Image (tube, rainbow, N blue to C red; front, side, top):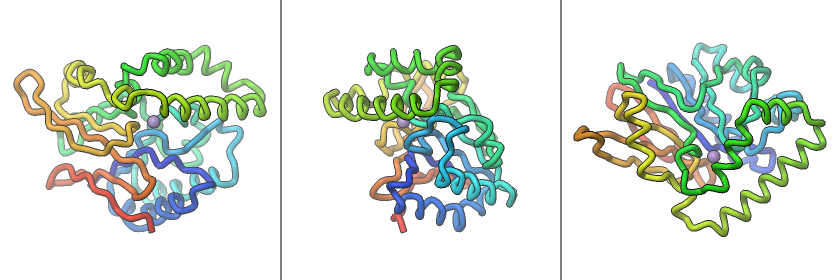
Length: 240
Ligand code: MN
């Protein structure tokens, strides 16, 4: 059995989500062969060199799971794209590229965070191109801590304000982006998060049935996608 989650937006200010995640790690995750975290695991990440005691405690909890034999994979989201190898070493997890193809039940499946599919949001796509460019990343990682902190809160403030102003369909996935992505990777199933619109979309691509599964964000409740011999099951659960 494999579990996939995303968009927990972990932060000290949401002890309810943190508690629910730690509970998930203690109860459900140990039964899995692998746990995939598809981005925006943390609400903000300004660098592995600036980890707070809270972030260290999350790394330690993940480490316990991976030491217990569960493979843990982590993909960057738009909030935590500065998360790096030092965190992964500490947490015992493997960083996955976005996009990435993994095999579940013998079937290749495309995994993404999802922000790269929201192409109608042109200002965000421009910002994303700049932020993910290797040279910008190098500069960002080497800025003084206080500058990174200021930059991160500015970006979050901007993103909150703009999301309020933008039409709701431009912060969702552009439907036309999906078939080319499936074709490019030779798959008929895509799993992503980011949009906070959990759903299973049934599609037809080149005359074949296809599926786009959108993971849910953890806020009023938690969400997980379970893959086992019965197939794919996306379901919410209460934050305990
Ligand atoms: Mn996101």
